[in-house]
Image (cartoon, rainbow, N blue to C red; front, side, top):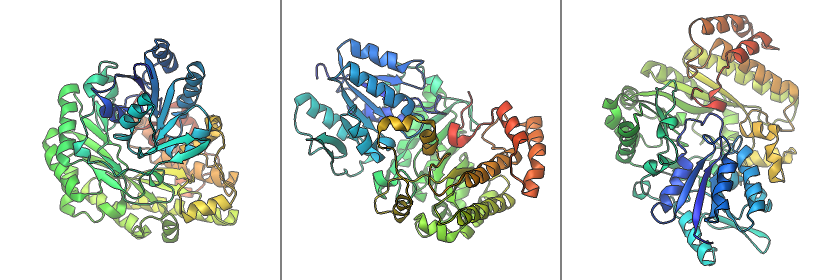
Length: 504
């Protein structure tokens, strides 16, 4: 390395134009004040490759580091990495994030990536930079993946850090590159919504979740006081009035959640987060009411299915049941918090008849949830395998003939991008008829019950859409809902699972 300067790159992600790039901010905090670095945000730069190339052309920058989620971020991450490595062979390229961790062999075999940080990089990243600069051995650096003598080496995982002991995120330094107000977008929660992470990991082992191979049922969160302090800084400095908590599981600790609710209650901020039904169902009514009164408007839950046997196959902790899903929807209706339930349809089965039967059962269950709580939001995914070691479900799908791409650039195809968004499964047991059944029902459901998070579909637009789809919804005739699709296309119906909550 020459000067050791670092480029921290956040590739463009669908629905994230107005989202604070917490991933690279977390990495930046680990080297702030120690190693010179710059930010490049693909969500805000018209041509991030040109910006990165300009930095590298100065000869002052020796490291390109990026974090990457599966799906749309790969559109920039893969070609930019390839091109920069070709133009600057001595460049050290470091990847992190869910995609690199779960597909680490494919990433390392590309020849364009030198190191992968799997899991938190708060200690691994600065330690790696020191080792690379000194030309020293990296075999003792935890959370590191690299190649040695042609073999991919995955070092052991580190203990999750004490999050309260981690340095503050360098928001003020980010503001020297980009106007922070561009990161506070309008959503159904508020006019200036911030994105925030308050914890690492999740204590559960759902067999379809990309978090599981990384954290292996580990979770650690900031204290309520630390969260409140950061949120207040963003409110007072940049005018934030709403929060999206992007934790894998914000609500693990009832005591932490309630304490945060008590601290934030008087601030007039609305917020959203992700949690588990079986966890929050154990919360007292008093706790849930405190959360609601403190501005919690909606909570995302993985309901997955109403079939108890399928829930067991998914490793949903052994405690979530179809009846519990229904009971909790009714309970949140009484409390006044909107449950955002996601369902995963299209799990493997021996015959097409069995696949279609399970899809129809899930559709009937979703309709039942809407009867119990009409305000419940419904998100529908198709099952996308995750390489979870020891998972019976992943073993089952592998034996059925499913396999991931063997070359990194293959992930750039539209079909694999949709796979990562759980839209196009590319699984051998799902026929076109099965996929059409899922997608057609989803179209009719979204027409008759438009998401509340799309604040553009209001008034007469909502009335027209409900009228167009109502006869289909009530009759159960979902085939070829072309008139509903046309309205959704004309009005640019926003799908929160793909595009987030933000307005353009």
